[in-house]
Image (tube, rainbow, N blue to C red):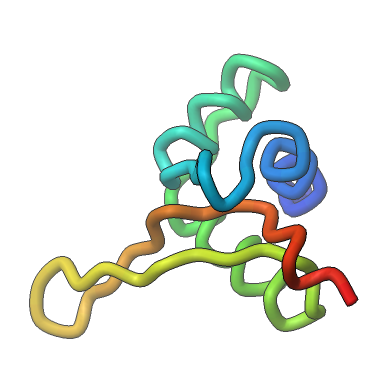
Length: 82
């Protein structure tokens, strides 16, 4: 299953710069709206793919421990639309 479109749809409908989502929020919405359980790595890879293909999705990286990072404040960024 490719969860990227589900995640993109959730971001498009439910987020913006003033209302960002966390990975756990996205995972919870996928569970509630579509009935799928996804782990945070699936969300991370989907967000990275969206950024590679220049989709208007922004996020912040927070350092957990050592070199381990996680994504937070993820949102559909209308300002990136050209």
